[in-house]
Image 1: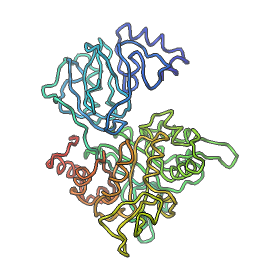
Image 2 (image 1 turned 30 degrees about the vertical axis):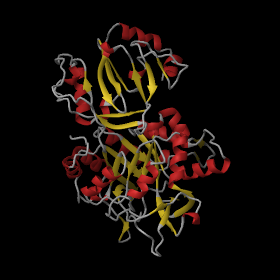
Image 3 (image 1 turned 180 degrees about the vertical axis):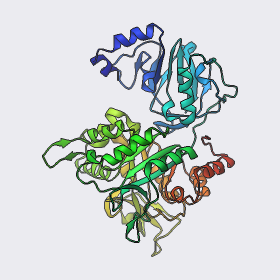
Length: 474
């Protein structure tokens, strides 16, 4: 960011503006830029408005720090007018500010350490969290900033120590029906047809807005349509993102077709260009599925990364937190660990022939094709390439309503240091409690039970709260 400001000759005008103490609101990296320097780019100087530096989290917790966390307020500010102090706000970052200049620290937050989560210096306010993705609380905070008549306050009930909430994510599988309209659908073991027709569970924008109002912490769109020619021509999905981002103020993830492409005229488009269009349309994170398998296979074959894969390109420009790897594994049973070179587990659920061990085979093409690659290796290599999060599906559990595959989640979670989202198999609130108490997954995703209105999101959150699981309440 600093390099871009310098190249566009914007640093001096920005510094003049800031030194004039005019109203300024910075978000995330814009807070970090107010300080002297950053470990993320040691060769670049910051704006130096506040003494201090930016450093990477040094913690055993998952990094990036992704999700809804609280704030501890240290000085009065009008942006907290009407706040109780118990609000949770959305964070997504790997680096945080470290400063001894406490006079300008507005709030702190706990995540393995106590870090600066917002600053206030005169009319300059900046937050590490994202108000524009923090639901009603975030919108209220921005409204307070714009209204200079609001009284500066410290909320009455700030926590002594903040806690990261477990995330509940609503997933919308989007594809074209036989009439060419984009609809939300859901499959059983990835089969989305019922009676010959694509199962239609609603319209994407309306459902996304409904889940936001119910309290979903994030919304994920997985575009499972076979692309007609080229992802950038898939304008209906772009329109879905644009319209959703006007009404839904939590993070949006989109997956499907984000890859390098050469059109019929021989013109090459990089995965970064494709992803950029989705980001401009309202996406916050990009999900990469089958292409991640092909990328990892090539890395393992050659023994090195090229720096040109979609994972590396997007992470380099937009940050690790912008890249989610969607893994679609299935169980392969073996009688003994030596029967396969892949990492195995001794499972509580033996195979049809009494096999006590299994490994998790990665698949492509919507689960229709298995590869000689396991989910653990895929996750580890993708983390090394720059991915910031793992969306862990399970073909065996998809559509069964029998609960998440806890064995798979624990296996992958132990192998990586980035956050893991559990997916596939949720059928009741108890399944969410299991995944948050029996694994270290940071989030749980569901689709069918929400679409069919079997279990509302609010019911899941109330059940978790009653069982002392940290969640965000609306």
